[in-house]
Length: 255
Image (cartoon, rainbow, N blue to C red; front, side):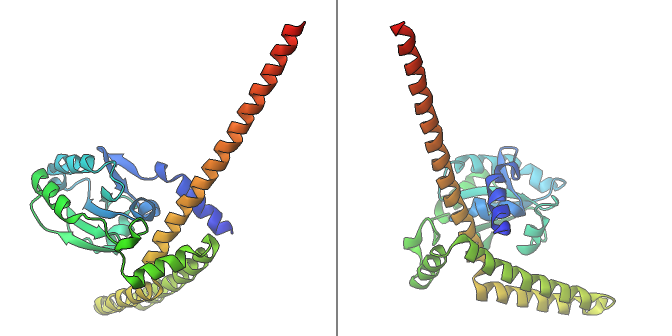
């Protein structure tokens, strides 16, 4: 319950984590799932010192403006030098800058086309289509739809238990790798290759990415319910205050 509360708190405050660098939403690890949940994305992975990144900054800003209010598509960026997003760049296998990836946030593909605004915009219009997601479940295969419905029917606490269990296994694999690579530099690539293979298999087997996306979506649902309750309470208080003022006024007039 404590972990769930902390997660919900992080979701409520996510707007203070990611920033709009040059009017482009810059994602960090903690809120990546929140912003990308149910959306098709187009992401630029960059570093502040990258000259090529600086040259296309204006082109990317124009594209981000084009989709700023789109409910199904997100155009954003990830700063690979920022301490809160470097892990994302590692997870997505980013080796050079800028790197562009698009599609389902859990299965991104690389864009290698022209970097002018015209080319980027044309590509986005042709390829950034709504795909299977919580917001477009009708586009999902029968198996994926059943999986989403199954997880969505679970409570947030049960989802957190599953995710926590997988996180523990992933941490165990990471600790095992760190122990093995100490002092054996020549076997580093072999060990890391096995580690990536095992963690990828574990995430696929447990539907880890789907679980995290659904966790973010369910958190938003609970926040909306909280906002409704707060709004209802405020409205009741206003009505109560209005009534007492009317009473005082009538009492004053009668005198």
